[in-house]
Length: 448
Length: 182
Image (cartoon, helix red, strand yellow):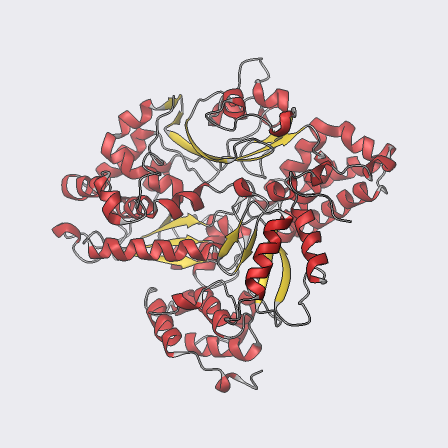
């Protein structure tokens, strides 16, 4: 149960460069696809693999590709979403900075399948150092004849460029990303039309996450059917999980989908258990946007089965009793964590990052942040809990893009599972002053 | 300070790089180069974007100045007021916060004798808090220029501050100076 594909060669010296990457079999999928397969055959393998979008939504990649409109005489584009900014998620930065060529090769094979002759990697502006790493990798690929005109004599041509963002969480939403790539504010577009019909500069466009694209060469090398054998049920393949919070071994782990959550948290192979011998309180399993679950609920499904790290198992029980695999940003909280204050922190984030287009999100996130602040100041009343619930329910599903949902779900789940803690903040405001545990850091004393 | 855009002159290296970047987008879509150009402009002109600098960018891309202002004000990485030579950006979100980001900010405020958002009197440091920088596994962390400083403790913060205090190479920008070559 520890198949490694994306990170198999992560510890190989010099793997950032094209030489070591090729020695480990890199760019063999490119040769196979371009020399022996038709574009539609590549798409067909990706469909068979069951690969699902690794950015958070989990939409089947092959199906997304097959939606791409192909009108004559209109260019098509592939855009890689490398705007990784979901709190708790750091897998794409890890992959791109260590093995940039895995993304470059994936971009070429995927562009070939889609019939795109120009492709862009939209990377977070904050990660400009990774931008330069990718630029070097792309230059090496041009030099090796893997990019540019008439690649490997096959007649297929592709230009690949990196594009830096400017610092905005919303640009991880695919239509906001396209607006941003066009040099505008990152305001999400109303859909339809979807990017597959009218995307970048109104041309048909596919937007895929870094990890999704990096998985494509492995699918081509081993075949879609073989890839589909890895994992469990409809959760095929491997997934990068960014583990962080109060655990002994934070980091990026490539797991075969289907590993039990309990094993993932407590095994020394992965997170290595909770820091300082503390007990597990709660987990946010797929980036800050997904519902928070108490420890016992993340370890077991509502029917009492061990919960697995897969799309289906994590969402078992719906929003009342489950959560989502999301981006794989796995945030673990120990018994001393204040759920209310953590929620205030997340809500401040969504307030800060709301683009301001839709009133429910623009106003609602700020309103929720203010109410949560009242809890921490000891001025909240029990009615404020109901008010918070009411506001989040009026944001969810009522905005152009999913940022509204992403802001509402953490609030709803925190109240659903930890209502007594909110009540405690109201009833015993004197306790609030004593909550110093979130300052607990080995070498750091609270500063007065 | 520049009086108007005619006084704003990019270095030769930056100008060549700008032209190279503009060519990455189809004819007539040169506005797409706006974000990279703003990063380069910020690196060239003291770590922030004044109106004349933004007007110059608009002129280069053949777009209206307002199209630059509205974009520069939307994204968090662009400073629209003067900043210190070295901008410290401390992540304040979720996982970093769980592991003590608030203490790091408080420690920096005390050490530098400024509040978040302010610049030290000698013009060396500006302290900012920012949202998640995708470095949650190495929390708490902060960014200076394009460098991530991770696993922060008070001692590590001291070391980093000392390093930059003694460094007099001019503005530390996100788009590092040595990368401004076409």
